[in-house]
Structure formats: C-alpha cells, structure tokens
Image 1 (cartoon, rainbow, N blue to C red):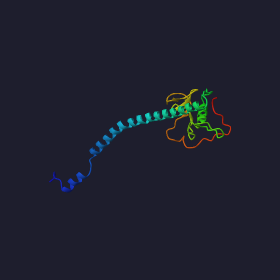
Image 2 (image 1 turned 180 degrees about the vertical axis):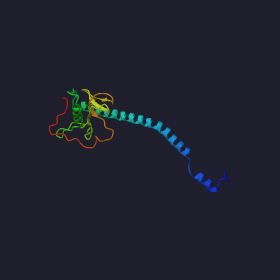
Image 3 (image 1 turned 30 degrees about the vertical axis):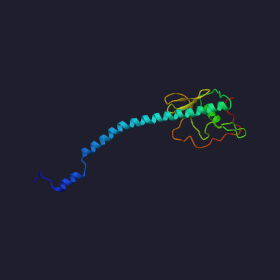
Image 4 (image 1 turned 90 degrees about the vertical axis):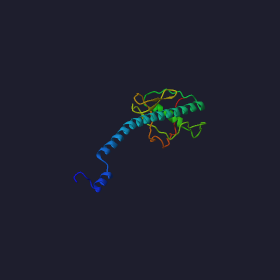
Length: 167
C-alpha cells in the first residue's frame, strides 16, 4: 500500500502548480522583458528626436512666415544665455493690438519653454537667421524642448513697451 495514492491525493496534485512550473513561467517572462525593454527605450528615444525636430520645423516655419510678412529677421545674438532665443520666440508670438500684422502671431502664444544649457536636453538655438537643434550630449544653450506638455497652456502677457527683435 505504500506506493499507491488515494484519489484525494491525486486530485490535490492536479489542482496546483509545481515550483518547477513557476520557475519556468518566471524565466519566460524574464526573457520577454529582456527583449522588450531595450526596444521600448529605442522607441522612446526616436520619438523624442521626432518631437524635437517637429518643434524646430514649426519654429522655423514661423520665422519664415514672419520674414515674408514683415522684414527679414536677421538678429545676431550677443550672449549664449538663451535670452536671444526667447526674444525671437516672443517676436513670433507677438500681435500688436494697435497695428496687427497680417498672419500674426506666427507662433502659438501659449508656448512658454524654459531656457536650458544641460547636455541632457534637446534645445533650440538661434543661429542669426533660423533655429537649429542641439541634441543631448552637445554643448549649447537654447529653448528647452519639453515632452510632458508643461511648457504649454498659459498665454504670455506682453509688456506695453514690447519691442520686436531685428529690423
């Protein structure tokens, strides 16, 4: 009788899973995660690059429209502080309430980016005629490209004596 099982013992064995089965499931999940996580990281990185390029293109399109409607915006910055980039952006966002220019504002007025010189950020730097993108790992100061939307929402309030860049 020693080697025989009762029907209750057999039923109990079939209801549960063994430790070996549990280890195998964990191993399969680990292999899938090891393949999927780097792929997800690559997708995130390429998405950020695409968003930064889109922001750059949008900003340079606004500069081009401004140039066509007003005057060619040639503005050589004086310091690598990011203030020049911000002044150009504000010029693109400005609409004179007394004498509005056709097509103005050329850039959405609720975009309020920060200025960054961190080599971890995507930044947009003014070159004197257009913006160029500075990728992470490169040195330079410019408008920081945010990916979480925290730089959108609040309209910038222009002071009464605002002077546009260039001319």
